[in-house]
Length: 149
Image 1 (cartoon, rainbow, N blue to C red):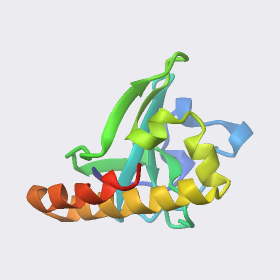
Image 2 (cartoon, helix red, strand yellow):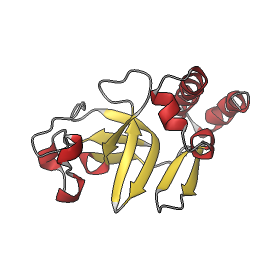
Image 3 (cartoon, rainbow, N blue to C red):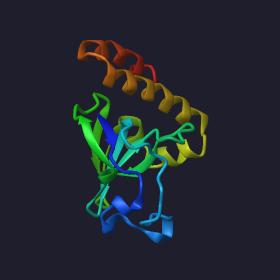
Image 4 (cartoon, helix red, strand yellow):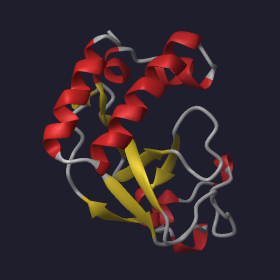
């Protein structure tokens, strides 16, 4: 799935996405470039808000969560690597299986745990190639993912 940034400020967000406690206000400028396309590595939905996990303009080694209303979808093909999970608390997540099977995967990734960083980098490369290639080429790349388990 690929999205294009259509706005990069809090002023463009619906009120329900704003949260002063996490510095998401009308004045916030996000690390995004209007017009730039981003690959989506995961999606979550909670309380009617949808979030895309992408490598934003400040990408270091893990995807950042960004508000869906800042983007338009330009390629709506879902990743072959995605799975869906509805958590007991009502959170819906769409991500690769390793992320969904470990409720602390994202925290381990942001804490620079070597296994999670390596795994994300491998899957990121596959997902990046997937959105840029024909479906039959992506099937070949899936064999690489099998060794990441």
